[in-house]
Length: 80
Image (tube, rainbow, N blue to C red; front, top):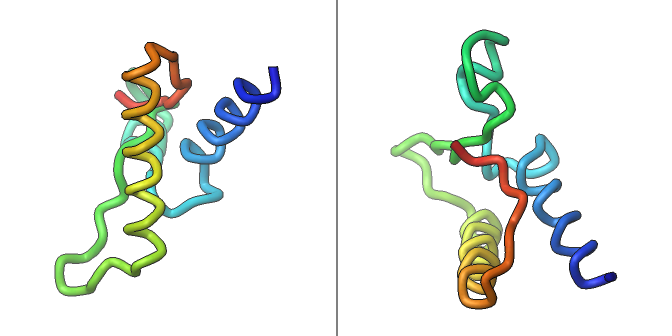
């Protein structure tokens, strides 16, 4: 239904270049090895503070994952 479609759409946006939160894993960037379609957290430089909007987006993803665990729903997040 519409609820499940919206969650699927959010997962597709999370694991994409649309948001700066996650980047394609090294194998995906070089086109070699396994798991080339997997995404890993984007590491921000340690000498720079993470913008508040980015922190809020990470928090939302954590809440989404928590909700999925509690409801025993599958999230199509392409993490290793």
